Image (tube, rainbow over all chains, first blue to last red; front, side):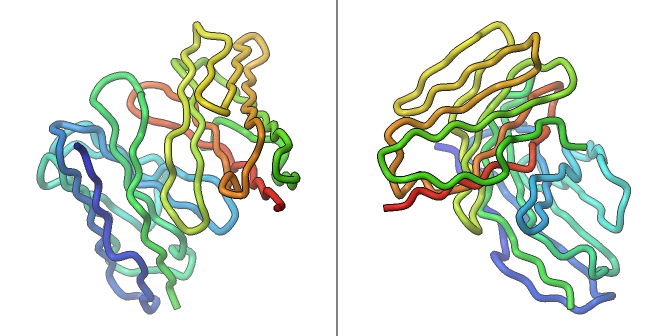
Length: 113
Length: 109
């Protein structure tokens, strides 16, 4: 069966520090991969999605970047965090092709102080 | 940008009652999906309805889709305390899902 791992679960980082959140998927190959951010009490904002290794599409220009160094690995990064980067970050995957069900990780609660 | 918008933003009901929430969207879709999120957790897929379908059932869930009005509804029948969560609609296009802001449902015992 397929599983998705996202870590860490919580993170407190100072302003100006770098960020690296990692997500890996098991039990499937060539998935679509996604990073979403959720502000407190709000919906999900799509940040990046990837349809293959090295292929990254950015939805919202901001202080973050994403990379997909391996088929089932998706990394969200920042060189210098801002206070506004605080939020709940969710990684997800779906089967390749037309949009179908998405499977979500448990999320990372990031607080920038 | 968010495609779907849920209504109401929050809903409080007694255990055993039905809960209905609505979703409106703006552009053409391939399908519409509903997800549940328990506090501080990831989202869990509940049901998918394709653009050529009008109604779909899954257990205590009933989803309708009206593409002419660009709207969908989710009905949870005979609610339980465990149904307390936020519910999101998501519209599917090529490669990606766009989510609404969600409806927070509280089921009182």
